[in-house]
Length: 169
Image 1 (cartoon, helix red, strand yellow):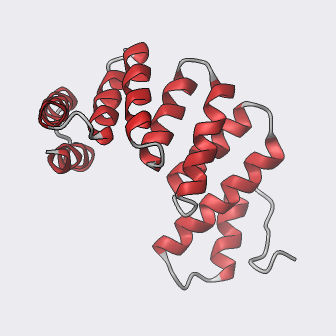
Image 2 (image 1 turned 180 degrees about the vertical axis):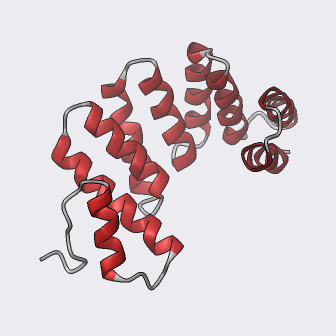
């Protein structure tokens, strides 16, 4: 069921499935999983995502905390809880969840981007720049495993970030 929920999410992003239809299906599948096995943290996470999309952030937080209690080491769930807190205007409380998600999944550019954005919003600009550079590098390596240094430099210039060579010098 969770695989179906993920598939509907991806299909909606790629093929323009009406958001309300995809959201409804995700919610249905997640509730079915919870009914069958209430110990599946990802089901609560997907329900929390539905709540976020519909603006019910308090409900999303409760569901995200349930998910994190069930699967405390799941980076997707930790990232989701951090996002809920951030959307509620509680950015400082989100930091530990983004940090834990980044420690568990250090090669996830999405988690690093979110963490960098949060640090920027909190005025921690040097940290944010470092994290964002790391996320960009991960994106480049994923897209082009043998990417050329000049391509990476042009990407950094386009984002107005200082260029840091791969060897750190």
